[in-house]
Image (cartoon, rainbow, N blue to C red; front, top):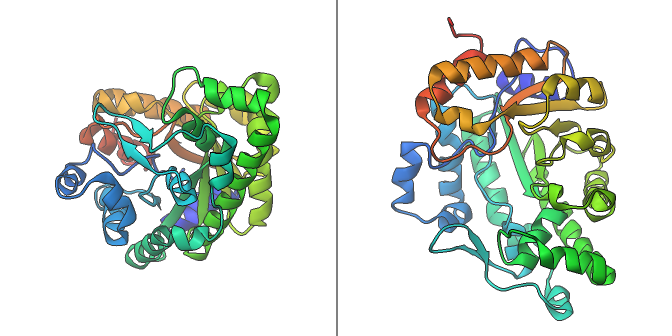
Length: 343
C-alpha cells in the first residue's frame, strides 16, 4: 500500500495496514533546512514563489516517512487576493495592512479571478506534485470564512474579537455580504487547488471557538457547508475547528469527509460519537514534540490506543507544529506510528 493509497483509504474509512500520518504545519522553523532558507528569503516571498514553496513543502518528507505533503502557504492569501494585504509585525504576529472597518471597505473587496490572483499557489501545487510523484498524497488548504473574517476585522490576532462580533450582531447585512465574498473566493480557490492535483483539502476554522454557542451554525458552519457543497465531491474535505470537538455532530453536517480534532477532546469518545459519519484525524498535543523522545513515544501510543482499530483514522497533531519542536521527538513519533519503535 503506497502512502497515498493509505491516506485515501483512511479518508474513505477503508482498512489500512497502519494509520496514515501527516502533521499540521509540518514544514517550518523546527527544521534547520527551513531556517537556512529563511535567512535568504522572507516568509511572503517563499509563499509567493512556486519553486521556494515546493522546496519548503518537500523538506519534511525528505526526513520523515509521511503519507501526505501539505502545500506551504498561508490562509491569509485569500484576504490579500481580495485586496487586503497582510504582513508580519516587528514584535511577532500577523497584521493586516488595514482594518476592514467600514461598509465601503467590505464593498471594495474583489472576489473575482481568484484562480488567476492566486495562480502562484496552483503553480506550486503542480510543481510539488511533479517532484513528489504519484505515491504520496498532496493536500491543499484554506481558512474558513469566519476565521478569515476575524483577521480582516480585527487587523490580525485579537484578544476579545470585539469588531467581528459587533459586525455579526449589529450589522448582519454587512456581515452576510462579507461572508458571501469570502465563500465565493474560497470556492474558486479550492477548485483551483483540486485542478492542480491535490488529493484532499483542509479547511481551518481556527477561531470557531470564539463564536457564541447559539451563533456557531449561522456565523461559521453554514458557510463551510456551502463551500463543501459547491466543491461537488471533487475532493475530500478535512475540517479542523479548534476547540469545537464537542460540536462534532454539527461539524459532520457540513459534509466534510474527515473531522480533525484538537487535543482537548478524548479521541475514543469522539470516534464513538462520530461513528461512520466521517473519518477522524488527530490529536497529539504539539507541545509533546518539545519534550523528549520517550515522552513522545508514550503519548503517541496513547493516542493510537484511543483511536482504536476501527477504519477511518489519520494520525495528526491537535494543532500546528510549533517552532520549538525537536527533530528527535518527531523521529520518535514517526517510528511509533509507522510501527518501527522497539519501546
